[in-house]
Amino acid sequence: MSSPDPEELRRALRADASNADGARLDVDGVLARSRRERRRRRTALVTGAASAIAVLAIGGAVALTGGFGANTASTTADAPASNSTEADGDAGPPSLPATGVAPADEPPQEELALRPIDRLNPCGTPPAAANTPTADGLAIAISAVPALDAGGTAQATVTLSNTGDIPYRGELLAGPALTIADGVTRWHTSGLEAVRIPLVLEPGESAAFTAPVRAARCDDDAALAAPDALPALAPGSYALSAAVAIAAPDAALGIPLVSEAVQLTVR
Image (cartoon, rainbow, N blue to C red; front, top):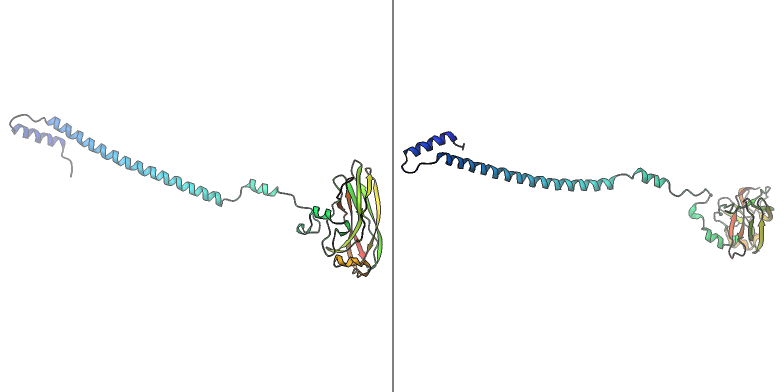
């Protein structure tokens, strides 16, 4: 229903007042009070609506905050690794040098040090990788051997050299021991006795040793108990390497020093 026009209401009240007996009606006062009441009601209505809007706004802010939090967590979990992470991954440990033997197949150095030098490479197993020269400059090398007849023997020359800048002082505990291999050991020296020979080399100096090599085949180390009964090695191309056990003076345990392999032809 529409509100009455104030001017019409004023005329009606004045007409009633002029016809009434007794005290006069304060028309202007009545209208003023009416206007104040209407303003109060409008103010209350607007205040209530504003409060409701404020509550909705606060609730919406909470909901949005929760939503952003969930999205942030999801984005973090689903995001690809950063470039810095990839760079760290690329800067990982350097790859091991190629030895021809899978790392899982190579026995640890501690185990190799405990083996007699003539059992460093058991028959049918991958040979130990070369580790020459040492940190102090001691190097081992084996000279090429002329072609061998299947089952034949020859003498191989093994050289220890000081490639460093300071004198080498140590001991030769055993060796040289030789190995013939074609990915796995086909034959190796056996029956060596332990020795303890002082090894003193000035920078650039060398010491040469000889050791026999035989073009025979062993399938397991038990067969080496009767080396003369070993079958002949099949003709072909093989790798021939040498190893010695060296130690610091008066050390109880030696370490193997293994040469790079040279080609051996069996005919």
